[in-house]
Image 1 (cartoon, rainbow, N blue to C red):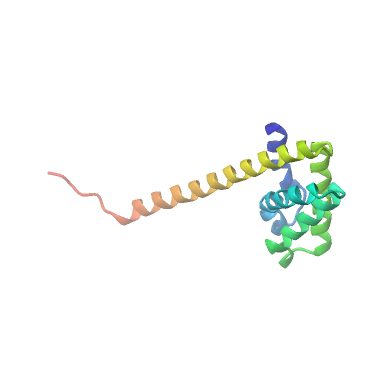
Image 2 (tube, rainbow, N blue to C red):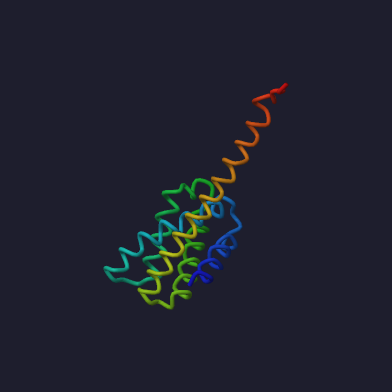
Length: 135
């Protein structure tokens, strides 16, 4: 399951050429998977539920400020189809997929934050304090 999720996580960036969508899509899918889990338990068409959850998260992330509504819906449909295909439409597989995806995405985001913080600290220490000479 982890390999499927890793491949999907990397593949997400190829679903759209629009940078506004691409830069937020992994975070959007994370939130949509959380929401879809609860909505799918109440039944309904999985593809439609996922598409609606993805579009909702795109609105939350302000993707449509710089991207067209049509392109966003098209990307949401592609992503929903891919998730349904990977999970074979099984709720338990979807649940596992969602859990692993959310954890993987959190780890990737934390790695980025740590990398930024590390480079910031290195830059500050390089410029802020002159080295003291010891005698």
